[in-house]
Image (tube, rainbow, N blue to C red):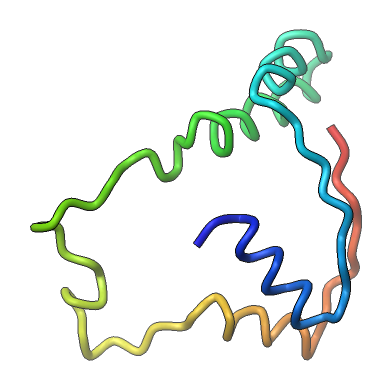
Length: 98
């Protein structure tokens, strides 16, 4: 599930639409190089996770096992279920700025 998938699901659950600002990988690199500390760290981490894909830079192969196959008796919580909890008890919304 991509970040955009999660945002889309949240928009549907809350009947809201959020303005999305797209920043290129090059812009993130430039921000991480030019912003003063600690603001440059935020740009560097965002670039690492979303630009370089550090958190998901792998592809499952045919012989790889998905976690639900390893632990079939475990009751997993879906992203949809987690977001339902936030709809019932919403956090205060704040925009994040670089």
